[in-house]
Image (cartoon, rainbow, N blue to C red; front, side, top):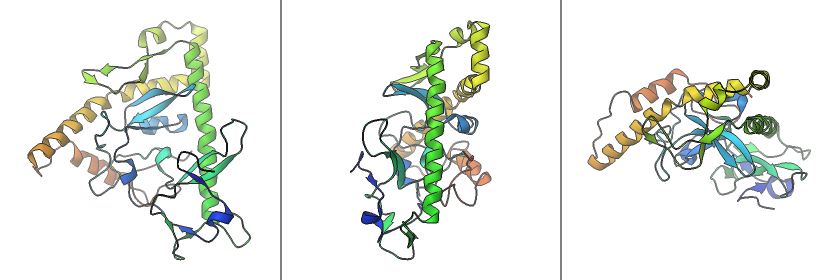
Length: 277
């Protein structure tokens, strides 16, 4: 059964196939945002604007990667390298995701595969899907464990945001310091937060809500940089000028080089640093 173009990994379908680790972040080039979880919030907020977005019946934090649909994110280089100092956990596992077999919340979760990528192969030099005994290969077991752990933390993060909804802390975030933002974003009302009764503030302190809120508030300063990066990209495209303005892509490349690791957990071969979930 396909889910949003993703296919469950099964021995019958993939037992004779292979997969390879991704080396390109081209898949993220046109992304506006990606979800983040509370366990990585400080790392994400140090690299991107982190705001909130309603997904279905839930609200979750997201890292903003671009300000305008159709505009490439400055965090992916022309040769598809990741340039930011941190790779959000949601971007670490192509071509795999986690999801439910059906549409009901009680349906079991399974490992899903995007078969449209060139990461699904018939080359025996690549990674096996299954061992000879029919179990997931050791590498896929590591991917599966990572995705299940992230799914659990995403549920915890949404529950944390629900407690903030009950305290009426969210408000539409339309612009920040003169930067117009994509529609549908939410931020924390500083006025409502300041006027919270002490018992409610204590709840947020104990459940990690204040940690999430403060990271969000500090991260908003990245919007000015992101807008500047988009303006530079527009000027460069219009003039076909190859000269790079200091402080933008040069700065990003320097950050990425300073934080390179020997491989993203669990799949990537290149990119910025990561935090274990």
